[in-house]
Image (tube, rainbow, N blue to C red):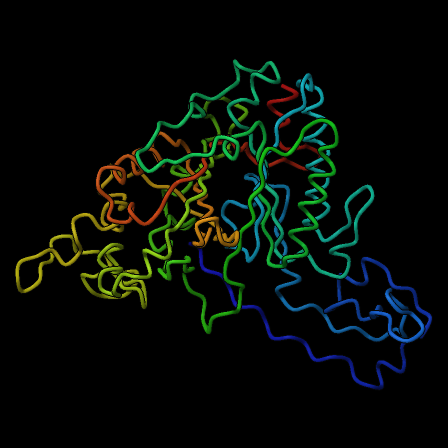
Length: 429
């Protein structure tokens, strides 16, 4: 997955002299707090203020670290949350429109959601009844992304505008799908590098839905926090494997062609948009962890330590698919996951993977309910996800250690310009 930058070192706290110079009665504003490393003007009440918050003498506040100040822009050619670096926390939530909601109410909902997303991504409170959960935090790389499911178009009378690329995905042998946790009329992806900022956005989006839509399913995920490693590196998944080495990069000449619908694509309202395939993939960790290190590496086709191909080199060294060992056996096994998923082994099929891990406790069988909230982006799923998954279905060594438990496909329109809301070209067109 895209590399994450390390946060800058914390700025030292203000000196004693600076603190004494500050007015003890100065008011604390939301905007002022956005420039601090915490709610330094608010402390948890102790004696005389039990169970609440008490005003403390104002102090000259130290600035936020880069983790808090990092900001993604809501307005742009593409929606946020697609090419941004992996975030530490994420929420995926699907909604179904209320009976009879129709196109007009859907448009009003997307207008509300877009304004809320714009404000929260800038580190501002939501428009109405803000919960103050993220009051003393900066934007923390918050992104909020919106998409439309196949069923959305019938609900709004827009069947003629439904893209053919949104046709239902075929069934795969690894599918054990829970239909109640699959698909949906609307999909929202939330990511941030602070858990409270992400939760704050989730609650605001849910409240904005009002009576227009109800939650169909929600999934919560996480990644390694920025700065947790000594140097930026590709993420690891819950199997301990480096995951995302061969992700397409925005610097590549054909990146936009692979990931985004062109300016003059069909339908016109999807220009500069993308298609998201969302899969909850359960990892059978108890079985996986019984394998030896060598067996795990043979399943994946890469070294667990540094992500390098078993044929040698570093993580980014091209895999030598023909290399054999002293006994004449292929060094990278024929059914290894990394070999099968290579774009040059799938007619150039490529997708931008941007997942979150999940752990939802222990299930009734006493095994971890954990794995990957797989999210991949492509200009056309029939040329991206589908051919690769079909090939994995036919003989991927990893398939016996994973189970696809839910699935969704969503059309994610291009970004909103200033003064517009997401999906406006579809809903007001």
